[in-house]
Image (cartoon, rainbow, N blue to C red; front, side):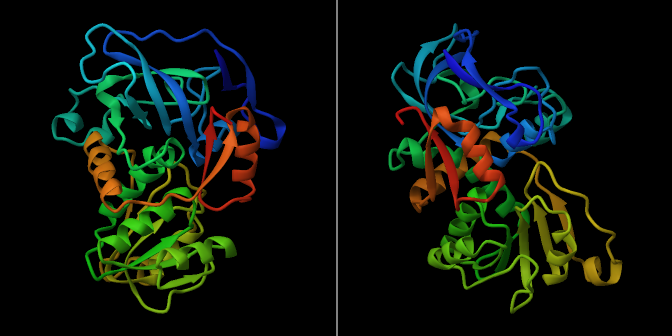
Length: 334
């Protein structure tokens, strides 16, 4: 099969992604084999390519927002049939036995594996996924629109729940890319007022088109105190900015796997009055199932930018340079 893999991590302009032939994967017991139709381009892929997150195995194939057709079944597989459309997401496996898995917090598993980091992902013509960690995708979504749901959507859903925002509350969103624009739609659907702070004028326009009540620059204070906020931009310098925008008792949830250094916080200005700061780590399969049901019910309208899958390196360069709004998707048919 043809695939992209990470050679020597470095600045995306230096060409850390390599393209060529790799052996076709074969499904192990309880794994399904997918013919990849589409794969979303996530900022985590960029972090892996550039070395902010070190690939755990040389030559790893990235990609964890995968939509594909089941073309092979490993021994013991019963959940899916040949020809079904399924999705593969960031969470590839958990141990099921550690103290976190036993209490239902498998996102905190002590020995997890992740698609495109520990196992080969969807920047390829074919890939395997354990059947218990694959998702059925609502029919309302095309392959292109479904792809970003499988990470950007799921992590946005978990971040929204971690923020504790209630119907009628004021939610701040910092950064407005692939995940944030989906989270905003969920929050608005559930009755929150959304305030978006982002440096991109195009993203500000999209936020207002989607129903945000305010859109301003990343360091601009919202016109009213926020009940909760989510930081999607991987910029630690925005942490004190977002904390100071919170009302008493508000929560700031940080949704990224990578964040630049956070400046020294001022306890009185940033945290006093029971403001809370928390991270968001991966997701559980329950998060994914609940989110996809909600996404199909709304239904969400992902803003996508299609790329031929042979242009994965260009898609990552454009993501790094903020050349598009929404989520890039690699399409095998292009």
